[in-house]
Image (tube, rainbow, N blue to C red; front, side):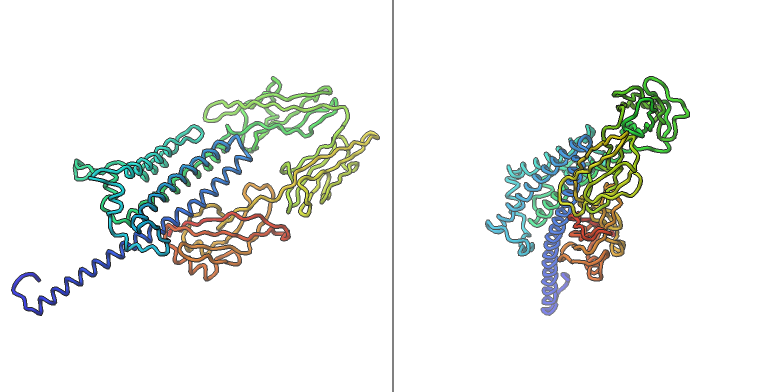
Length: 526
């Protein structure tokens, strides 16, 4: 095109061709700028989804800290600290982003829906903010230090005195690496990290990187909080975390009776075998050591307070593990109080039949009278109590019985609670679930009550379905309808789908109002 003598017509054609190439390059540049901006918005959406997931994990830890403070109180406090540090880190980066936009648009940050990314092609704003005469400014140094401080804080986190896993630490180092960049085969030319990543880049690219750092922080927080929950659950499986439990057939005995019952670990395992059991200084005969528990068979003794004291010895990893135990009981001359206990917990719940065992030691079942709101008898010493319509916060159960011509009366007060809030599920899984789009389209949306001792069945009437960049869709039933499946097809790999505002009901008792159901988040893997 450049060689030889050209005619005027050929020169004009060549000139038009060059203009066409320049126009194509300009158009491609605009598309690249818009792509950076759109990607930044997508990452911001992902960060918001991770924030919701992290809030769910925080609430789970807080609830467990209330139920089991010795196991989870420290973890809950640490989780709140991590969440606070991450929020401060994200707030700083958002402030840097707003500062850049104010400079670009002369003091005013435009709304996101009116932000024209094609206007952010220059690099002068970030260059002047972070650099001066080839060196970082105070803002630039502060920016780098903020990233390093957050990274070092994460790396120094210890859970129950132990550092984070090698995998998590490597992820943190990689995500928040600020090492200088080495160029060339021998790595002799070194470029400072801040210049290599932010000098000379379009402003829109810097906004993308800032948004990406926020998302990385949210992802890292999610990994650490998830490790806290999984780590404690794994620890609970170990036998060394169980305690011996003595279960007596009765809590009080007459003089001359034998004390009978069982000694076992907190969670009785039929495969458990003991190496040795010592009770009150004497070894228990082998024929009383059955699978999972020790049979007690000894005199009760005289009237008064007594105790069964001993230790269980078992072998684990070729080492003897000793678990001591002490249980006290009373030997009484005649029954003087009723024994009332909830079969499953120390409270009664609205919406369900609460099973109760009620008896008076030494008094026949047909001589016992029991009264309480919503209580009915279902068997010998067995009752169920339904307090769905009961408005009080506590309920009293009154018991009376006759023994040896005398009337024994007693009463017990139980707390009345609502059924705890359920969690949403996709194909039975809750929290953050990973699955292909096709599987989600076929999956059932449900609700369940984790760690709730009653066999409660929940149904779902409807739910809200939200995919990135699209309006929320209300879906009736338990599966995605045609409109929801159409939205699902637009979701890309790695994006998250929200299923929330799940309307659940209690099967068999539709009049009971269920508390708000926790959302479930689905990460699309392909």
